[in-house]
Image 1 (cartoon, rainbow over the protein chains, first blue to last red):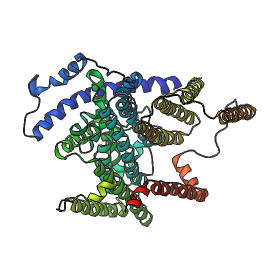
Image 2: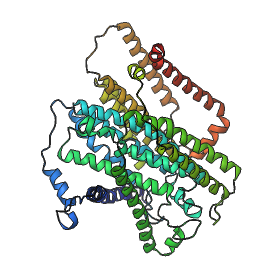
Image 3: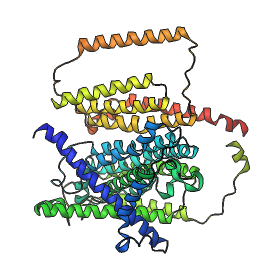
Length: 391
Length: 168
């Protein structure tokens, strides 16, 4: 094929499709989230504009467009305008790399043999928007929010990155398609990599500054954190960035741990072969399965937001560095030992290997222990006065 | 053709932003330009058929190290004050050293640079190949580097924990 087509035109087309689809989904998410939060809190949520409040999806963007666009005095102009836009770019590019359906469906960029690393590289740069916006606003609360988010996102990238190492050891590939193919032939990675999945979900919530970890915008301490000084469409861009990153992370979790577009394990069920035989209908079914799983993850984000209270900043750092990172390292270690002890993994066959079952059992024990430790009733800790004076 | 356009565009981007890093007064702008320069460098790696290195370049430098740089710069809240030039000799030596280095670089690059298509590389640049080389042939240097980093961490802990130890 013509290189211009392969490297310029097709990616641009795909980029545009991703852009429009994500815009629509984010607008819908806004309504879904408010509505669901309403139900979680035993109220109705927005239900006045149109049927079931669906008109809210259009009303909100109109409101954003019509509000006063405000720039604080003595703001760093360039950085102030760049801030909300920067997080958008990586998330939209990442959508071009995620396989939404079985191979022919989105066959534009599937030959990148470092696909997963590239996605991580791009999403790790999304933090710049928040830091920049917080710094450029010329506001102490914004700056605090930006600093917090820098510390938090750098810290939680480590467990996020370490948690996928176990998956890579099982699947032996960095290509997202290969990872999905492995899962449909063996078992979804969530079973042998239960601990990794747990770490990934926690860390991805922290990466997105979502509620148990939303310290960069903790309104009881920092007004609104890094976006205090942002109004109208610029604020909407921040929201768009946050939600599209949520969608990206949900897609990643689905691909890495929950079988991607396939529905079935051990080669049984809706696998790639079955879908490919069905032609474009199969592609649609695969994409439908993927999007359904992704929506479940988005639901989980909202569920978390409605359920968990916010962490304190030192608790957040302790969880990341003292709990999640050692756990992720232990997971790599155990996975390595089991894989060396039972090297009988059969790719392309319908045998679920002994090692995977062992890993599943170990993972369940670890998660059970963690839950017991976390929810064990304990007396409130008395703050040590001498430690406070030290700090 | 496409490759040439991409190469010269991103080479220009890398050089321009690298110049901004040294010439701009505001440290935040400098740090951000360095990030942009890193991105352009990552594109160079992709052109050299080493996408793994490109991804690592962005993850490590743009995604982690420069975020921490920015964090520190903002935490210190550096104002853009031009410091008076107190050490003219050192400044002259600095100019001289970097000019010599640049001249040497240009000379050797122009002497040995390959201005035609390179033959296919002798070893694969995939993640697997790099991992095997790193953990088989180069395991000793690899471990030495990790010990170096460990020493740096221990040193940082010693320096930052001094006050607390003294109080106790």
